[in-house]
Length: 388
Ligand code: EPS
Image 1 (cartoon, helix red, strand yellow):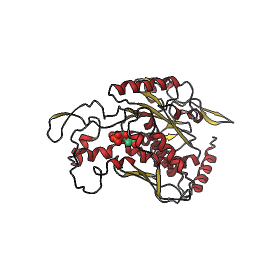
Image 2 (spheres, rainbow, N blue to C red):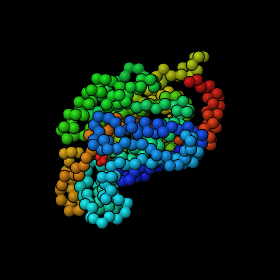
Image 3 (cartoon, helix red, strand yellow):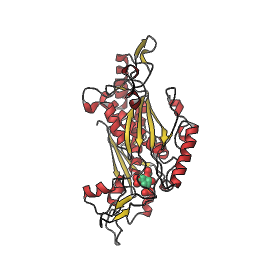
Image 4 (tube, rainbow, N blue to C red):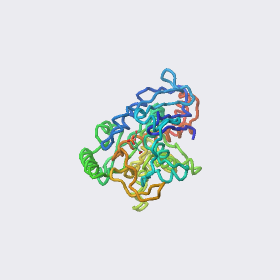
């Protein structure tokens, strides 16, 4: 990648770190660009007790001066307030007292395979890093990518379209950026008021039954140029890069681009987006079944990707498991948990889509300073006759 994001840290350790390498110099960044999304990620009906403890915010410890990037790696630190309650159990250094080990892996979590693979006897050594707490750091870094994209006229939004069996009704018209203005005022980040209420009730109903819930979110990106990504090599195709980025989010098991699973079932004549030209609009499409990608490249239509999240594997009524020390049958670990994090996963996916798109701009337009990139983008837009 031309733009790299790396995180470090454990869920109940002292904190999380995110390093973003490859941003141009001269990019204006405001503290709100990072912290607003971190706060949005903490919301959503179905969150557990942990979110009452944390007040996620990023401290910048490198790469930004007086509100502008310097061109080197940007370092962001997120404190885990809950560490105060875990200091002994999560201390980086040896402690005087014995700390009880966890031996009860949860089906669906990284617990069992992680302990085998890394030769741990304590499942906590796996679950702390495997925890979705790590996404707080990704969202901080994604805020930098979003600030870069916003400078280039690109906006990213997300909404929830399904929680457990409750689906928002399919939309007749394409969404515009403005349609997302109130999305965060829904407790499940759903644009349909009736579906939103039904989703909240379903979370309450299943939570009382000691269940967790999955669902589906959609991310859209507006203002993209045609030609980001490429067909020339498999790893340059943007569909694949986006699928990887979204599937890398905890509990995400499926990704679709545009109307993927619907068009798989219709004849070819109804599956594509016909091409038109008018002197005022230039080349254009009347549909966007492809979700803004053809041949692994952006078409200039909004990017539309979805992620399917499985129900969270920490259950208040645990599933059957085995004690990894005694090999006796046992109930899986019972821990404080969330019952539904699909709304938060949508915010995380915005960050991951922002990373992939910002990287695509960096690869295509190069440049050391943001002005170099703006100039290169302007020249390209002129060459292809692109009209926003
Ligand atoms: C998580 C378990 C819960 C979640 C956590 C992810 O944490 P805890 O064990 O402290 O209650 O709240 O998510 C976050 C802390 C977060 O910031 O999203 C897990 O096991 O993956």
